[in-house]
Length: 288
Image (tube, rainbow, N blue to C red; front, side, top):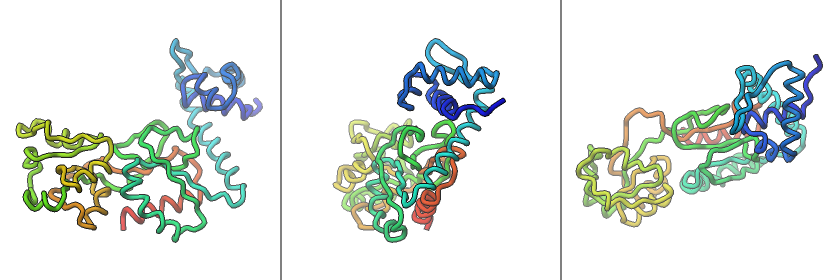
């Protein structure tokens, strides 16, 4: 049997990622019929059914699932080799949550440029699920617990380690508290992760009318610094404001938890020297 055509493999990979011929066609900038034809051709050459055709899309067969992992790894190797052949291309696009960018990464970019003047680090601020195959992004940082999607590898950058913080004036009147439930009667500030709702679940002293709800952690920390209440946020994002005295720490979570900030990249992707340098630098900054 001759080796499958590369176009058929790319059509199969796109269809496997989207489980939809139309979306795969948009990804590859060809027609839906061309994608379906390439996949049928590949199935005929292999003598295997790679997809179950369903009324609302596709589903990989067991053979298709196995083949998909191998094909994706091979395509990643080809793409990486092609990038490496192009001289002087050292741009690395990284996707990070907006608050992580504002509170942690952007203030350190000058230090990164001094350490790696040969790398053009581009930041895309987003918390959305990312499709590496259809973007320029080579690396992402996401907050939560893995897994963050199929065929993605993860590495812990830093644990979440929630801390309760407030403006110094409010902090002086409250004082450090060993039990986080003691804050239930005070004005509280939280972001879209709704950490207060989680840690104070079932607390009878919680007055929800006094919980200020904001969309981003950076906004919640700024609101707390302006005296609007006690924010519950990852220590990593509050450290700069704590260091300058804009915020004071009232409580810190010392329990073990799998939540944190994770480095995310495609599973089995070929290592890129510039991306490796970015990862090494990020780890050195997060774990000094």
